[in-house]
Amino acid sequence: MVVDGQVGTGSGEPETSDSLRTFGAVVQALREFNGLSREEFGALVGFSKHTVASVELGRRMPDVDLVEAAERVLGNTGALRRAVEHLVRQPGLAAWFRRWASMEKLAITLCTYECRMIPGLLQTEAYARQLFVDELPPLSDEQIEANWAARVERQKLLHLRPNTAFGFIIEEHVLLRQTGGAQASLGAIEHLLGMGELRNIEIQIMPLVRKAHAGLHGSMQLLETPKHKWFAYMEAPETGQLVSDPKAISVLQQRYARMRSQALSIEDSVSLLHRMRGEL
Image 1: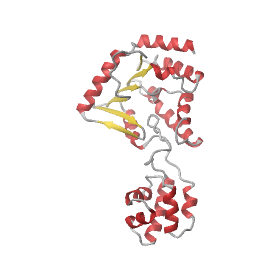
Image 2: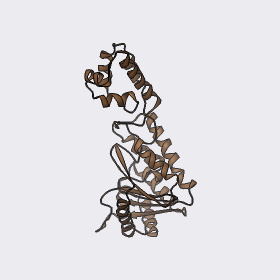
Image 3: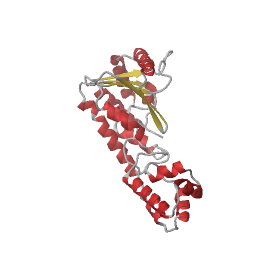
Image 4: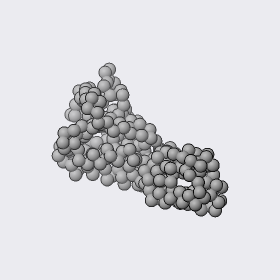
């Protein structure tokens, strides 16, 4: 699963790391020492040559079955079994999110609609940590710390880019869910109220009851570059899509504009957040 561009343990193609690249280089060296092509080696271990290539290039966490089969084929020295215990993914942002994250740093406009969770840029530590703890397969303590560190670094944009216009539309039910418990929810609401006081940040709440809703296709983000070119980003489990086609962007902009009119005004959103805070 992916949580707002964050790396989880379930990804088949994780962001590479030094340990993955080193492990892959060892596999490649042993394979070549035994005079095997990737295709031949793949046939012997029961995996495709493309999977073998991904492992050797450090792009893929090796499957346990692949490691065991590779040991048998490459001399059964135990080196690969011992080495695989020390493999780690690159902490922080998922590979498919990295380009979007780099574009965020230069954006002059960033619009976000979120129906699943409080957007990453607005998450408190207690809220974000609950999301990381809920990941499946479970994350290690080290991965959770790395994910939170990456999120904090990303959140600096809100203060470092005072001339960037940030707009957020958040579904009311996201806050009613009380992710992390009542105290975490209270802290999240207080944080939203505080961030909404910044001149470059607008936060609107989409009410729970809404007869017409232009955002039923799911969460999305829109971004304007300093050259006034627009991009969009949409995320799904294990992947994300960066959209640059002007026609597709136009449709998403229309949807976002309609949602802004359907959501509560900024003033009414603040009133709702105050009311929700008092009820916790």
